[in-house]
Structures are given as structure tokens and as C-alpha cells.
Image 1 (cartoon, rainbow, N blue to C red):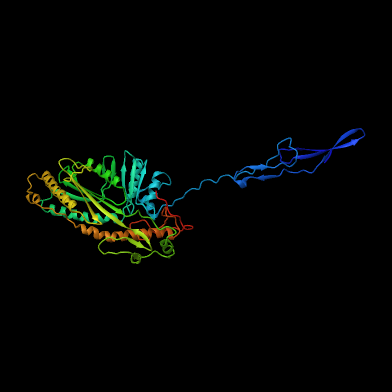
Image 2 (tube, rainbow, N blue to C red):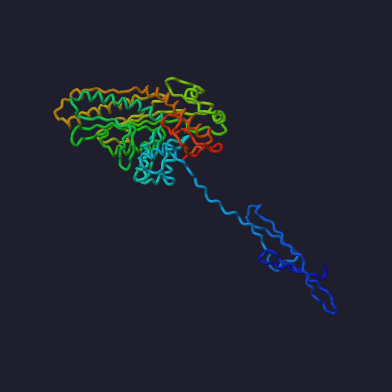
Length: 474
């Protein structure tokens, strides 16, 4: 427009006033006439569509403004506060806390350990926790003793390391045969001792301290003289590994051998599965079929649905609806006995240690011979402690007693046939309770006693929203 200039002035209120100065001739003089033009806000376009959180401006006039155009800033909404993860303790944990007179923690290391202990749909029965103080370990031990299913705790004070193992039915299979065998030997030897000169005990849940390690072995055979004070010795230790690593198991036995130099025999068993257990994935046939069922299958119905080879006297793979619930691959043994010096767990001397395989192919002759030597040495320890009580006791019959292996290895294999099926069914029930009822497979959220009547803490679950994703391992 000839003779016209446009200037814009922006204000802090984002409403700039626009004045049009028009030249008008009056006589020989040009007079500026100010005409107010309609206000026009700057056109802005938000750039948040690009995810930048800024604004982009476009000028409103052709001439550059004398001052920067006003900006329309779109503020980001304030960030939401982090959600507080509320975890309801299960019924048994609350009862245990009530019995020992303490409150359950909601944060910290104790809380993490209890999370693992109370987890349902468990894919891992073994966990290691670091930076656990001795006070925290003793607190957890008190809670554990009050639980129906007692976790096995091993605590290394110098490293502040806590090892937690949730023993299942497969773990007890070996001890259910070996422990009665040792008890039978003890009774036969005690009958040859005149009077009450010694006290013999077999401990399945005795807490011992081995250096900086405090733990509960699977089996401890202890002998006491009937004197004041009594003289005690622990000649036999047995430890079963069903989930922890071989390195962890060997380190534990090293501590025992150093802390108890008078130990006569140490027995170790290592149970292995072909593959680490994992629950059915959401796209598998087992997931689609089993989660639609309105109630959990009975023990008999579940196992009658098995596919693949079956046996009545040997463990076989348990496959139901195409999913492997348990697959035992090997059961290995190693035994150490004392020579002229304390037991050395790292020795390769064939006179002091022997290895054998019970499953899948039985090869236990060397272990049997070594264990019978150890049992004969245990008999001699009976003689020594009886003489402490009564130096003039006649123990000739006890010294002449010949000891053979007091149990049959085939009994252990036979028991594995059914303990593996029980473990498979327990895993199925835990998975069904966690997944088919719409609850994440992380923490058991139940407010009442378990429906499944066994020591495991799987039971009536609370209702959750939606189907879960597969739980993470810890």
C-alpha cells in the first residue's frame, strides 16, 4: 500500500498493538495521521507434536518486528509422583511375625528376602543376597523357624552373604532313605554297649557354626558321652544340593571340614535337572489350555494327562499339555573320610574320597565301599566315647561288629520316581494360582490359609487385574 508503513509493538501480555501511519497531504505539509488498526495476535504453532516441549513462532507481518514477538508457552504437566509399590504379605508370613512378636518390613534387605521366600510360581529355589548384616540374619532366622515351609539359610558373616534355598519334595528324597539307615546302625551299635554310656542323636535341623558360616546341614550325626560335662563329637555330615551351584556346595563343605577336624565322614549329593525349570509362556499350548480351566486339576488327573514314556520304578520326564514340568537328568554322590589328618574336601586321593552316579546309570560301588569304611570308623568313635564314660566297660562285641551299608540305593531311585511327579504337580498348582487367576507371578497375595494342603505357601490368591506377564527371576 503506497505511503503506508506498519510497525508492531509487543507487550508482555502477548497482545501487541498495531498502528498504521498514513501520509496525508495538507497544504505543503505532510501530516501523519495515526489510524488504529484491529489487533492481531501472532500466529504460533506448538512444536510439542514433535516431542520437543517448545513452541515455534511464525511472524505476523512482512516487516521484521522491532521487538521479538510474544511467545505462547505450553507448560508440561507436573510429573506424577512415583507409585508406591504395596506388597501384601501372605498369610503365613503374617502369622510367623505374630508368633515371634515383630512387624514385617516394607523396605530394605529383609523385605527382599521375604519377597523371595513368599513368592508363588517359583522358577528358582535358590537365591543369594549380599550386604545382609548379622542382626538381619538372626531376625530372618526367627521368622523362618515359624513358617510351615522352612527355608534353608546359610550365612557368611565375613562376606555378609545370605544364601536362601527353598527345599522341595525332590530335595528330601535322598534323606528319607539315608537318615533311617543311619538311625538303624546307631541302634544296633548301642545295643552292644552295656548300660547308658553314650547318647546318639541324628539331627535334620541342627544349626551349626563352621568358621564364619552359619547354616543347617541336611543331616548331622552327633555322639555325646554321659559325663559332666559331656564330651560331644559330630562324626558324620550330609549335605544335599538340589538347586544351588556346585561351587557353593563345595565351599560350604570346606567350612565344615575346617571347623570340625574330628569329623569322620562327609557325604554330598548333587541333584540336577536337564534344564532349569520355567513356567509356561503366554503363547504356549499349555498356557492356553490350562489357564482356561475353572479349577486346579487334581493330583491324579494332572499326572494322568502325561505324555511320553512312563515308569513305575525310575524317574521319567513329566510332560503335561506339551510343557516340561520336571525332568531329572542326574544324581551324583561324593563321599570323604578322615585319614591321619582332618578331611580335605579338595583331595583326589582314592583312599580318602570316592565319586559315583546313581542316576541315570547306577555306578555306586566305590561310594558304597568308602561309606562302609566311614561307618566302621564311626563304630570306633562309639567305643572311644563309651570308654570316656566308663573306662572299664566291656566293649569287645562292639569292636567286632561288622557294618554294611544300611540302605539300598535302588530305594532312592524308586522314591525319585514319585517325588519328581510331586514336584511337577506342585509347580503346576503354583503356576495356576498365580497366572490363571490373574495375578502376577511375583509375590503371593493371599489373605487366608492355603487351599493346597502342603507345606508350600501356595494357596488362595487375591484377585488381580488382567493377565500377568512372566515373572522376573531375582
